[in-house]
Length: 305
Image 1 (cartoon, rainbow, N blue to C red):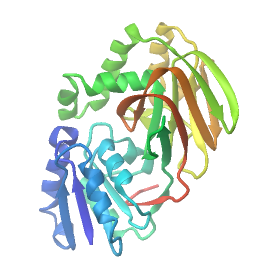
Image 2: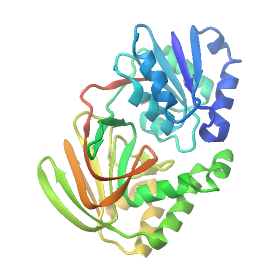
Image 3: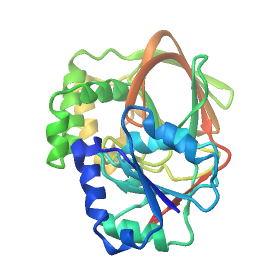
């Protein structure tokens, strides 16, 4: 049984249009399937939690953006259900990180035909005293989180999503945030070893290289167990930040002296002042966070990796 979870608002309606077209395809008509449209924020999580009660013989196919797959993964209470993903959002970094390519109908056929799914390790995070949750792409603190907040609240995001240029929203937001951004002072604890960072611009952790619609923020990150790839942007001038982000799509920013790339099994970040963070593109604030990899991987069907 294939269970579709579609976010009709993802990509300014793109995900809904994709599913409508797929319903007319031969592949879809031959499937034993059922579908659910998400109706509000967090609904994807509720649907996945309900599906998890009886996982036998089921595959979930998500049609939406990174926020939609984030909800579904956080709703799953078992790793026994394989996941298929057909990108229909604005950034679609999860698809890039998993090597999911092609037109929607081609991806659907790959999900049906592939017998050996990609084994994918997601990340876990715990903010302050809240319950543990998962991230599928990345979690970042500081500058990138402020950019994500600005882009999410902008009046131009929907326009650029509709014309297939969602990354432009991120670039515009970057320029707006750059003017007033103030670096943060934080303490990092990597596998028990502490680092005190002053005038730090950002700390980012990724399960794969991509975020922001294709930016290779941690160029050498690979899907793997136990290891957290971490990027730190230390003290840097605002003019140099512009130069740095011009190279981020190619991963060349890692050559800047202000950029440090590390690996750890666990990471804790803490600050006396509230720090903004983003998880798979959604933002909030916290004082501390503990991050690690989930022990049991999930299975991604339809990947070309």
